[in-house]
Length: 206
Image (cartoon, one colour):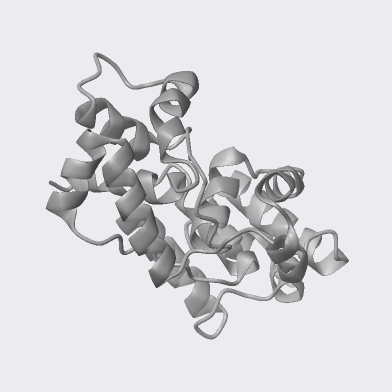
């Protein structure tokens, strides 16, 4: 079983990151302790991540809120989501592609090809492979699942715009880093790249 994010791990991670990367260390000093939130429930996290794809946080939050409102205040279970009419799901603000994607997730969980228990037991690479087999789920969504639901401490979401922009500012790069550049910058952070990535998001807030 891979190590999971908890309060003790976050302390070790901050110590390691400050020691191995002076620029990141200075950022950690400004921001303070990492407050990464592990939310659990992979199924609901996948649905939420799909809704948040390529949308501003407020807009995605509003759509997610309307979806929950349609199902008694909660993200619907797989069977309920599969039974829902696509037109009704469009009414809450979901695009056709996102309706198809969340129903594909529901189908995967209803059929048993994915389950919360299986995902918790998989290593990171296996979890990414399993999740991205579902139509409409890419690596970014898989990385968000690993970081914020499964609590994996060593994930580098190289496709995330905020992480790339934070790295560009922190390391004074001429352009947004591509995957290879970001992986090179983050290599010393292992095995705590999730925590380093969380701090890169904070660059945009400072």
